[in-house]
Amino acid sequence: MPSAESIQNASLPAAAAGTITFGHFTVNRMGYGAMRITGPGIWGPPADRENAKRVLRRALDLGVDFIDTADSYGPNVSEELIAEALYPYPEGLVIATKGGLLRDGPDSWPGDGRPEHLKRACEGSLERLRVERIDLYQFHWPDERVPVEDSVGALVELQQEGKIRDIGVSNFGVERLARARRIATVVSVQNRYNLAERDSDDVLAVCERDGLAFIPWYPLAASKLSGSRGGSGRRKRATDAIARVAERLGATPSQVALAWLLARSPAMLPIPGTSSVQHLEENVSAAALRLSDSDLAELQGR
Image 1: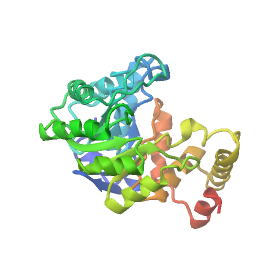
Image 2: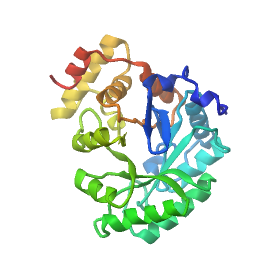
Image 3: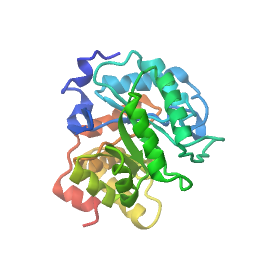
């Protein structure tokens, strides 16, 4: 496992993306999302548990110092694997987790934003991650049955109890984010965002203005932006543009898609996920890929 010193080493690949400071943390802007180290449908354990742990350890070797997970990944499996692979955690590693979604089967994600559920979920995450305080705890998905003030208020109480350090939200629009920020110091927003899906541009603008981190989930659209040129409309145009730029630069489409995110905003903290060491290394190396103005214009259809 990397030492406390090496994970902060500016010569490691993830550091090429530069850093972002939000809440109490400064981390490299190339993180890792630990959803896909679970079984199919993000359900149950992976087929090869040791390989999943190798991926996590390799992420740290590469200078990744921000890992994102959730109690719903597995459920519980992702958090358990992180602790098995990385505990005791090196200094400088930030582990973010989330609560607010339930699981009743593969690819099924019913929500539960009740304060009592979020408090139980946090306690479970503390136990599985083997920590006394969670670095960044995020409300995973708004529950239309529960006022956002009640859900986020539960996180404020957990913060006051010393069980979480910073509060984040996920899948929030501008109006709901403003409501959450009236009762809590929110330091990050995690929304679906990639070159073809930019509905959260207005949320990103708030993050840029106010110093919040914007954590894009589905940054590669599950390889749809980095694979075949199929599709229609905006997705097809984005996929075709990524393929052209990748060919010109001698990079992979995935690397170009991630490099575009990094160039899009200094508030951006990508967390590409994979269960493959090879793909992890490919993704992290995108931290060093620089896109020219003409590359960016082509990718954005200008």
